[in-house]
Image (cartoon, rainbow, N blue to C red; front, side, top):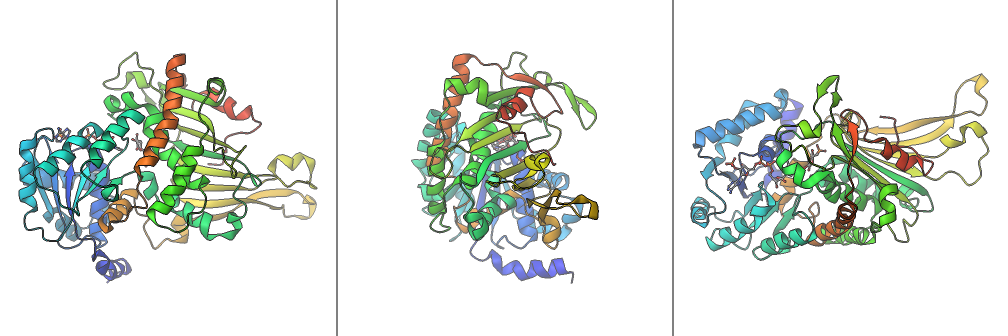
Amino acid sequence: MSQDTRSRSARSSDAAGTEVDFVLFGALGDLSQRKLYPALYHLERENLLATSTRLLGVARQDESLDGFKSRVESALKQYVPGEELDRASLKRFLTRLDYRCLDATQPEGYAEIREWRQGAGERPMVIYLAVGASLYGDICRYLQDSGSLDERSRVVVEKPIGYDLESSAEINDAIGAVFPESRIYRIDHYLGKETVQNLIALRFANPLFGTQWNQSHISHVEITVAEKVGIEGRWGYFDQAGQLRDMVQNHLLQLICLIAMDPPANLDADAIRDEKVKVLKALKPFTDDMLGRDVVRGQYIAGTSDGVNVPGYLEEPDANTESHTETFVAMKAEVSNWRWAGVPFYLRTGKRMPEKLSQIVIHFRQQPHYIFDPDQRALAANKLVIRLQPDEGIALQVLTKDSGLDKGMRLRPGPLHLDFNSAFSKTRIPDAYERLLLEVMKGQQYLFVRRDEVEHAWKWCDSLINAWRERDELPRRYPAGSWGPVASIAMITQDGRSWYEDY
Ligand SMILES: NC(=O)C1=CN([C@@H]2O[C@H](COP(=O)(O)OP(=O)(O)OC[C@H]3O[C@@H](n4cnc5c(N)ncnc54)[C@H](OP(=O)(O)O)[C@@H]3O)[C@@H](O)[C@H]2O)C=CC1
Ligand SMILES: O=C1O[C@H](COP(=O)(O)O)[C@@H](O)[C@H](O)[C@H]1O
C-alpha cells in the first residue's frame, strides 16, 4: 500500500459527522465544472465524504442522468490533474450523482427536490446556489413552500451578493426570511486558501509578530491580486460588476480584515467575524480629493500574454464597445483606528496582468538610528511577504552581513523562507473550495462571511462607486500583459514607495 493510500484510508473515519446531501443549483455552470466537482472529487478521494452522501444537480437544460454524469466526468478530466484522478474514486463519486431539470423561477418543479430527499433520514440537506444572486430569494422561498427544508437545512451562497448595499440587503433579507444566519454560508473562496488561513496562525500564534503588528512598527502594507486571465467568456456578468465589485468588495477586503483585525477572544466564527466587522467599520470613506490621487481605475487594451497577442476588454466576445467598466483598480486605503492610524494599505488587482500573483507584503519601519553604509539605507527594513498563489509560502526579508573579506559591514537582504510545497511536500495543498465544502458539511461557519461584513464592505465600496459616477471618471488604458496603468505606479511613488517586485 502506498503512503498516500495508507494516509487516505487512515482518514476514512474523518467523514463521520459530515453526512449531508447536496442539492446543487447551477449544476451545469462554469463554477460547478471548474471548482465544485473537482473539490468534491478530492474530498471523495481523501475519504472525507460520508458513504451516505448524495448530490442532486439542478439546472434548466434537459439532461439525462447518464448525460449529466458524463459531463461531470469530462469536467473532472479537464480540471483535475491526471495523476490525481483515480478510477475507483471517480466511480464512487459518480454513483452519488443525480440530476433534475428545473427552472428555479417556477415553483412547480420543487416537489421533485422534496421527493428526492425522502428517505434521507437524519442527513441535513446542503443547498449550494451556484447561480446568479438574483435567483437566491426565489429558490429559498420555493424550497420552503414546497416542504423540502427542515430545521437542519443549510444554504451556501456565492459572491457577489448584490450590486450595492441596497440590492445586497434585499437578497440577504430574502435568504434570511427562510434560513437563520447560523445556517447561511456566504462563500468568499479566498478565506479557504491555505496561506490565508495561515495568516491567522502567523499573527496569533507567533509572539514575534504579535508585538510588532501595529503602526509603531509597520510603515505600510501592500496587497496585490494580479490575474493573468481576461474575462474568460464572462463578459455579460463582469461588465455589470467591474473589478471593484468582483474582487475588492469581497476578496481584498477580507484580506485587509485578516491583516488588520485585533486578536479574537477565541476561534469561534462570531469571535472572528466581530473583529473583522470592526475593521470594515474603521475603513476611511473615500472623499472627492482622494479620487485622482489615491485611486486608479484601469481597463485593458490589446496586448500580449505569454508572448501571444490577446484582445482588449472591448474586443472580447459579447463586448459592448462603449463600456467604461474597470478591469483594474489600485487604491490607497486606510484603517482609521488606534492600531493602524497613518498606515497606508496599498491595494491593486486587475485582469490580464503579466502573471497570476496574489501576495501581501508587510513593510516594517526602519530602525530609529541607522549605523550602516548610507547608500544602503533604503534597504534597511524588514518585509514579510505572504504569498497566496502561486507557490504558497511566507518569507521574512531580513538583513545580514554580506559575506567575504572585502565586504566590510555591507548589508545583504535575504529571505527566511517557508515554502509550503517543499516544507510540507508530503501533503497536497487543497483547493479553497475543498476546505470550504468540508466546513459546510461539518456545520462550521468561521470561514464564511456574516451578513454585516458583506454590508459594511458594500457601504465602503459604494462610496467609491458613487464618487466615480458623480465625476464620470473614465478608466485609464493599460496594455494586456502589463502591471496596469502607469498612474498606479505614480500613486505609490508619490509617497516615496514602490510596489514590491521580487516575484
Ligand atoms: N464562475 C466563477 O468563476 C465564479 C462564479 N461565482 C458565482 O457563482 C454563481 C454561478 O456562476 P457561473 O457558474 O459562472 O454561472 P454560469 O452562467 O456558468 O452558470 C449558471 C448555472 O445556473 C443555471 N441556471 C441559470 N438560471 C437558472 C434557472 N432559472 N433555473 C435553474 N438553473 C438556472 C444554469 O443552468 P442552464 O445551464 O441549464 O441554463 C447554469 O447551470 C454566480 O453567482 C457567480 O457570481 C463566484 C465566483 C467565481
Ligand atoms: O471570485 C472571483 O475570483 C476569481 C479569482 O480567483 P483566484 O482564486 O483564481 O484568485 C476571478 O477570476 C473572478 O473574476 C472572480 O469572480
